[in-house]
Image (cartoon, rainbow, N blue to C red; front, side, top):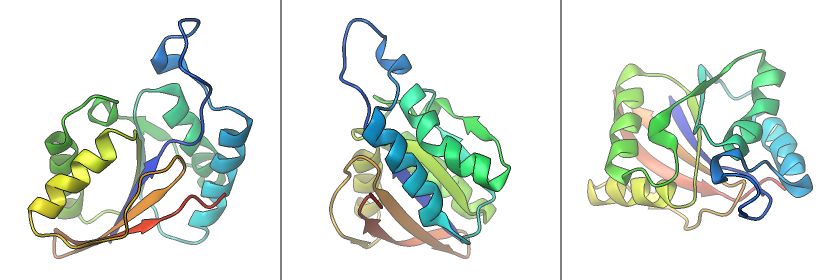
Length: 153
């Protein structure tokens, strides 16, 4: 089974005009979201989860549309959450034996990966650029390794 941690695609600048949770993807981000949907190709996916932030939801919406699936909003994926919280969520999903996509933020994904690495899980690659994907392989209910995949666009 596999868990995919997706960093949201390129979004408009932070501003006072829109609350940060409502900040949408920009043109580049919308193209990245389409490329991410295509990248998943025939990979099995049981669930798609997203931070409540609009830019995260918009990142995985093309994938959900392509697969005729819904995006489930998960508060533990929002920016500013503790990395241990996300690591625990990943552990529960691994134990459940599902293939899932989780879209989150550039502060939370590295924090969760640090938790996994401190727990002895080998991680290949380094990064968390917008639109990138961390591929976490699972076996027997445990995360066994992770690999960084640069943004498909």
